[in-house]
Image 1 (cartoon, rainbow, N blue to C red):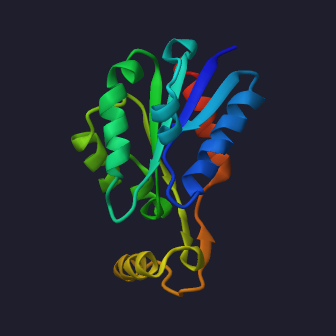
Image 2: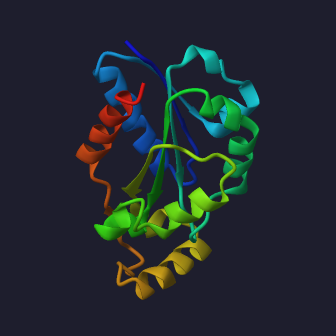
Length: 178
């Protein structure tokens, strides 16, 4: 039995949902797992030595990752590097096959260049378009991006591109790292 910590940052809740599916899969496979947001982990602390494996995730918004996420990684780079680990990003651009790969996903490539932490295992997960639940400015900005990338632009569109079976497969893959 492995002990796994699933760490995530989520803005509108979808990355938290992905993290939860990973956490549930790890437990269903007979392992012990905890799940924490990076904000919670930073404020309350983490018993890093308790875990055999770290799975870390973050959404991409407007092609960037939140500064708070980069700060967390800079602060805990050594702890993350000390054990097997994997990083996943969640973005709507990963809805296309080429952009669902780390090599074809420019946001993953940007992360690998800019992050103080250099994860050894990475995964791109398709996200969710959810115009009705985004603020007006976010919805308009994403609508513009979707227009350029031939994605959905209807302001009432709610489309989950996440392949939930692939998320479970990714969780099982991560278990082989430890």
